[in-house]
Length: 117
Picture 1: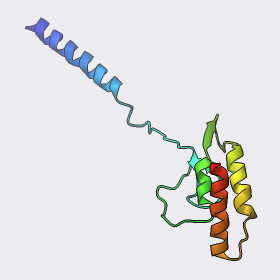
Picture 2: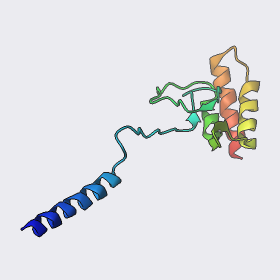
Picture 3: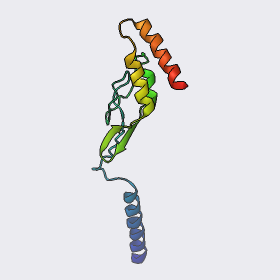
Picture 4: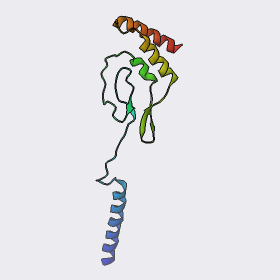
């Protein structure tokens, strides 16, 4: 009887060790860091670890250029990846006249066409 009890306690002990080893300790919080653009709209292209959780669907001048923007984790730094296409897009949009929104939209549409060709 004593041997069965020792055997049973040994099994319970081994199982408890294996179960505890599969879960992170309660004191250790898993830190999830996401390297991404920290704004939703426009040409303010800053990469970092605080991207917005949600963005509006409102369009801002230069939003279409954001498709060419990529952030990259390099060591502990989150940085914008250099892209000739992104640079061309930003230069084209910045060259558009800012006074009349409809004129700016037409100019921006021409920028889209230039980048697709």
